[in-house]
Structure formats: structure tokens, C-alpha cells
Length: 200
Image (cartoon, rainbow, N blue to C red; front, top):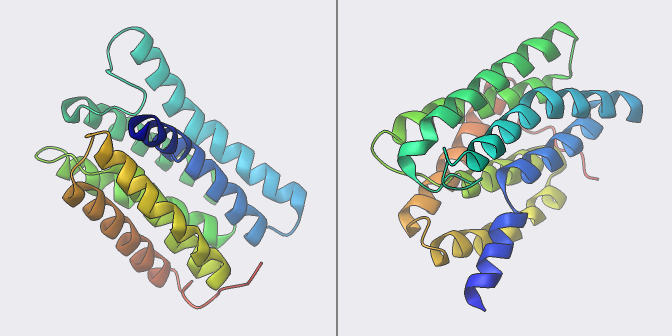
């Protein structure tokens, strides 16, 4: 039963779904209209998320990867590289189209995290699941204040799930969360976006 709950938690709070949800929220927070928010969401989904997910699914079906969430460290760096390239492409596109600064900062934070985690992965398997949740919580807290901070309730069960499934140690889930949160704070500070919370 514990393994089943851990699997369900890990699958629901996976980086792809979490990133899509946050992109949607950030887009609606920063865009001038609902139509514009949907435009940014669709662009980032089509360029930044869907290609990575599609390649991973293809490689899993061809037995090139062990699972969709790539639990083996040695299989991760190629996916980190692909995700980084897709993020850079997304960033170039939305910059050219005049995207809101918050979306630009979010992609810069994701790219910075990808580069750092790719380097760490050469020696140690850090948790991308908890990184995405913690980075998302930090972003939503910056943008929506205490309302956004409520999303932090998702972090403990996810950290438990990843360790219960023995995909990560406590140190790995903690490091992933702390580094991602720190990167978001540093990047948003660089862009002058701290202290801009707008409650939902």
C-alpha cells in the first residue's frame, strides 16, 4: 500500500505536469489577457515540454531508457541536455515575441537549474521531482504571496514518495529542493521581480 501511494504521488507530481501547471499560472498572472496567457502556455508546452516528453517516451519504448522518469543516473545527462536545448529555444522564441518578464525569468531559472543539475549528475543523482516542486513553490510564492506558498504542502509527500520508492536518498531530495528554490530566488532577484506578489 505504501509503495502504491508513493508511486501515485510521484507520478502525479512529476516534472512535466508540475511545469505545465506553473507555466499556466505564471502566464495568467503576467499576461494582459486570457487569450495571450493561453498563447504563451501553448508555445512553451509545444517547444519546451512536449518534445522532451515525446523523446523520453520513444526511448523507453525502444528500451533505451529504464523509465519515463529516468531513475538511473547514467541515463540522465542526455535528457538534461535535450531539456536545456528546448528551454533555450523556448526562451529565444518568447523573447522575440515580447513575452512578460516573469516568463523570461522562469525559463532562465529552469535553464540554470538544468545546467547545474547536469553537472552534479556526473557524480551524484539529485532529485528533479523535488527540484521542480520546490522551484515552483518559490515562484508561486514570489508571484502570489501567501496564497502561492500554500503549494508547499506538496513538497513533503513528494519527498517521502521518492525516498520510499528508493529512487533517491533524503540528501538527494533535500538538495534538489534547496538548490532549485535558491536558483529561482537568485534569478528573480536579478530580474527585479522579488516583492511583486499579487494575491490571487
